[in-house]
Structure formats: C-alpha cells, structure tokens
Amino acid sequence: MPRTNKKHFIIFNNCGVISATTPKDWARANQQVFPDYTFEDANTTPIVNVIENYLVNTLNYRRVENDEIIIHYAYKEI
Image (cartoon, rainbow, N blue to C red; front, side, top):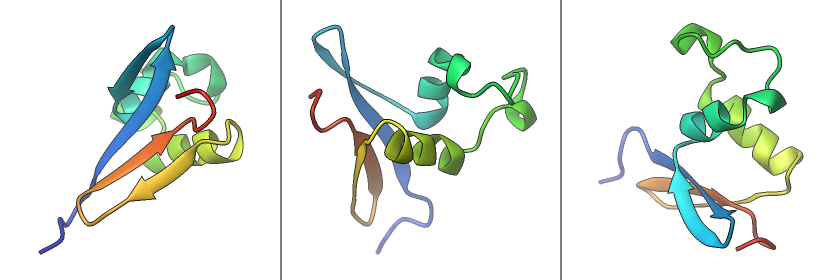
C-alpha cells in the first residue's frame, strides 16, 4: 500500500561528499534564493512544492519517485 504522504529528499554534492537532506532544510541553508521568505517559522518558510520547483526549473535537478519517496538530485554534479 502506498504512503499517504511521500518522504522528500534532496541529494547534492557537498564539496565532494554526496549528501542528502529534506527540501526545507536545503532551503534554510540556501535562504538567499528565496528572498520573499524570512524563515522565521513554518508560515514564512517556502513549502516543499516551491522548493522543488526551484530545484527543477532553476537548477535543472532531476526527480525520481516511487510509492514512498521523492528524490531530487543534480544529475551532472553527483
């Protein structure tokens, strides 16, 4: 049975070390790319769809998913 809410992960090259994090943690570490958000609380932090759209449309990340997880990754950097 598929999960109701899938787990979301970002995989990226962190100075030669392949790392994984959640979309919101990735956004907190890259706040400069979301100038319309203050990151003070849940209401002022971008939602997962906004973060993932930025990754796909601006940074050309790829998306793979199954019934349980969604992963975004930088194909050429990993």
